[in-house]
Image 1 (cartoon, one colour):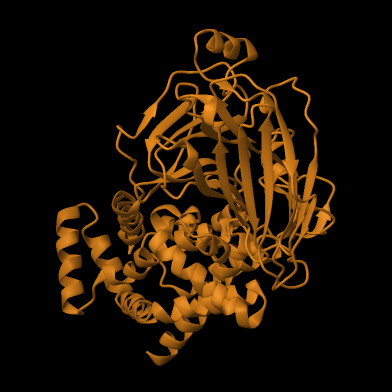
Image 2 (cartoon, helix red, strand yellow):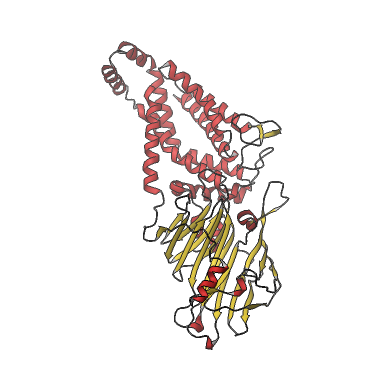
Length: 546
């Protein structure tokens, strides 16, 4: 019994290392994702740089996106059942994108604006066209407002940019009432006498680095290419990443929300992602709109601004649901999340859904737990014999181990059988931790009474003073204290270790776990509490039966 806990811990770490190696996402080949040199200037360069390019006969950015060019600035308002959007014609760019079903705080005073949440004061999505001549464009639009109701058909918006030479750039946006995805078609129609020019389309995502709510949840840029999701990490030595090829999408994500440019692998793209000094993030996708036939210079793509909700991401298609990424626990976490969502469709309470999910997981592990409790009971029966052997051979470890093994064989007891359920349930626990701490379904989801947000720590009352080891807000962690109490009851019901020192350490475990869980999401604490209660009942049943 003395070695069981140590052995369980060692084996647990081995399981974590092996599974992490087998199931963690593999990085793309170095030929596709490479480090680029640090760039101090803005994407696209300064006005002086662009003038120099003109002198050398190279491409120049269209005047309608150049700084200082006066254009009829217009705001177009789009209202759907899911979001309210403000599209600026200067660019165009997305100025505002408010999600009607999500709020910044649980008091529901203000809805989430993705542009504000991710981009700060910067334009979030910006469309740019690279042209090989300097010209001034005027802008025309067929609508000033678009309003979609539930069940209505999709609606389109045309933005046309035209210069005095009759060169045209047309952006057509298609909005849907039941999706956060917006389809876009960009068409470039140069004047027939324009000569041999090759315009390009640049799509920019700008943002500000947002701190992840969960320590193991990614925030920042991610790209999907060659059926692989790559979560890009920056540091001082690697502030820029570039990748060329058939990129399916580029995303700027936080724990709960995402802005994504979906290219659908239609055209070879050059994607450049960078982190500037401080926390500013800039992403740019460069698409060559036409190669041979200038009259067919058209490309279709999409943008998605919304929650990292599996149902909406699946509607968006293009493997967008891969952004709900739980790392090496994905193969366990995704079914658990689907199971929790399925339960919530009926009970309409994610706290109750967590309880049902806990019972279901407990039923699956019931045979293993039974075997463990029976083994612990058998170990308790031979405890006096174990103590005698340890006392008799305390100065001869080898002989002690031989006698102990002989004792186990005589009574047909496997000392490891009590550890097996613990080891098997460790990946399930980690998967549940990822699901319950980073799923948008639990964001601001209430349970009962004082638990108004299952993604946040539980606090009864709110104190004005700070409490050591507790993250704000400060209050009484009722669920966590109950969880610690149930762990203590479990310890008392289990056979005591032969070593008195180890017995005292085991009794300290409930206290250690209580402090460890004090800042965990209340949804995870609820799972652990219910699991403890079910384990106590099972343990009591086994003891009575034996």
